[in-house]
Image 1 (cartoon, helix red, strand yellow):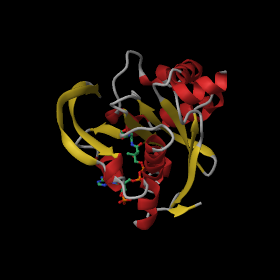
Image 2: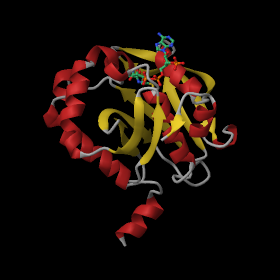
Image 3: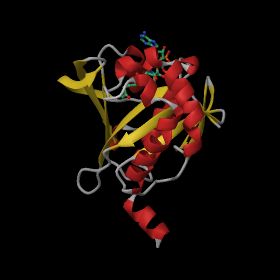
Length: 217
Ligand code: ACO
């Protein structure tokens, strides 16, 4: 009964995705889990300056929010949303180690079949294609087992590395959302980018392989 419910209410979850080989190593997506707390907290605290300019504000300060003791509540909240069919909260693994997160959220089915995608990767692993590989895996999973038709993302115009990731994954710009999200102390404009299944020839991962940015694992 539980299996029936999980496959029909939320196709594609909790299935791991990948791997795919990028210049930095082997990238894979798998559901977040309670024992990610130590790595998550260490990276999020070390990388505050790298992450905070791009993330929505929260009521509690960065240190408290990213203490190891905060993770069980965050992780359970994410997994609860996943069980309800609304989200796919993945850890990004590089060579088997937690190095970031990729989330597919606001999943809707029916005639819309849409979701947003968001991600972050530890600074020490930046520039090796990890986010690009993870996004391609997320797109193929979203358009495949999850059954989505459209995936969108919002990104600050100033976020050049993230815009590069989205461009490599073939997202298309749809417009500028004025004062869209409260980030880093102010209401920030965001670009809305999107891709629909018709825009991919083959798959997102095969496009990366064709572009010479990844190889099959
Ligand atoms: N200007 C232009 N391009 C840049 C710059 C820059 N200043 N810095 C890096 N880049 C390019 C790199 O050259 C690379 O492109 P290339 O492969 O063509 O050379 C690209 O940005 C980065 O690609 P990846 O290596 O796949 O990405 P990475 O694993 O380094 O992760 C990420 C990128 C996720 C943006 C990481 O820096 C990060 O976590 N940043 C902080 C959090 C964040 O911004 N998250 C995204 C929010 S928006 C969203 O979620 C939709």
